[in-house]
Length: 84
Image (cartoon, rainbow, N blue to C red; front, side):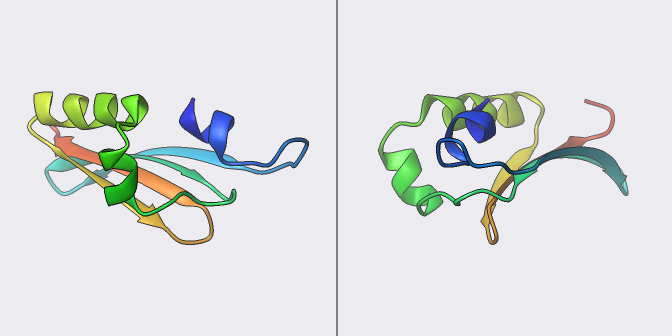
């Protein structure tokens, strides 16, 4: 939802990609877009982004972690044990 809502300027097209893959004994779920990018993750967290808080909480509940990568858009990756 965040990617659809915030990644692209009004009327601009773009691409959102969702991938789920095994990486050893872990699973990685990644949502990426080629949009305008976001401010640094620390600044977003400090401003109380509800969407990212929910993703972070889900990652914790699965004994996993969350990464935010900002390069040619934004990617948010949640990884967790495959047996979660």
